[in-house]
Length: 248
Ligand SMILES: Cc1cc2nc3c(=O)[nH]c(=O)nc-3n(C[C@H](O)[C@H](O)[C@H](O)COP(=O)(O)OP(=O)(O)OC[C@H]3O[C@@H](n4cnc5c(N)ncnc54)[C@H](O)[C@@H]3O)c2cc1C
Image 1 (tube, protein in one colour):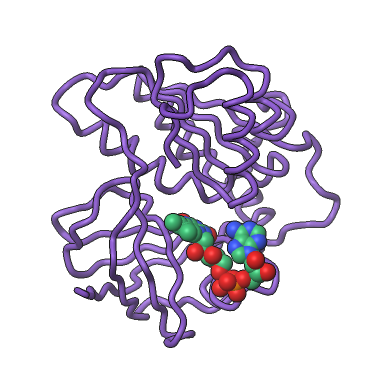
Image 2 (cartoon, rainbow, N blue to C red; image 1 turned 90 degrees about the vertical axis):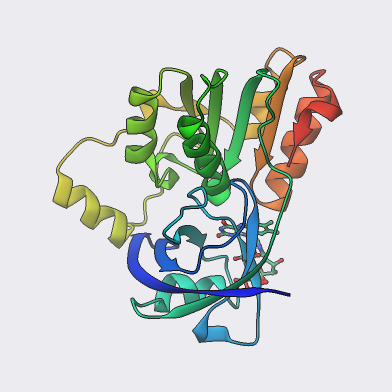
């Protein structure tokens, strides 16, 4: 199988458990919405799949959003130990998360770093020659602090008239325990959070989907942890959305 290399050029620690990693390297023939199998130097014998948050670029730019899962072998080392200059190996682009050309309205439902492939798809749509269909992105987290890409989503939603962003959180109140990385970013920008509790819908993404009208004539894209995807798809089908309209 073909393997490509890319070098880490930027590492941004946004939360205790989350980092954004930017790389530059070989041009990789993947499609927006797909994932790649990744090997990092900290764990050269283990591979994991991660979804680029940018569509493919001619100059080989890549961006990944990685959340450290508790007791995870690879994700913890990526979030804690990645440094500029690291070389990642990438292979096996695959996945069917995509927007077709039917012009049907798009509903995206992203839990946590499930936002990454959705962002790649939104940026890809923005570059198409034709006007994109309306897109509604429901982006979920545990609390407002979890919505790590709020600034970027705000900019996208204000610049792209066809995009609506709805933040959804399990609880409106952030945990009491501090998050050093988030607190530093907040102190540097000295701004109120872009998605404060007053902007968010409360509940799980599955809760929110279970009370929507059925998405009968839409393209519905779901991405997140296995549990989030299963609960959300089940809620969508329960509310009358046809299974054939859902991609994950
Ligand atoms: C198609 C695809 C795309 C993906 N894209 C991304 C991405 O863009 N960003 C990202 O951060 N992750 C993504 N993942 C998840 C990623 O591949 C790893 O599974 C994750 O980083 C955990 O790896 P690990 O080695 O740290 O944990 P492991 O050592 O494999 O697992 C440790 C423990 O954590 C549990 N666990 C594993 N994953 C999760 C999870 N998501 N939530 C809760 N518990 C979990 C395991 O069951 C196990 O008990 C994607 C997965 C797939 C299949």
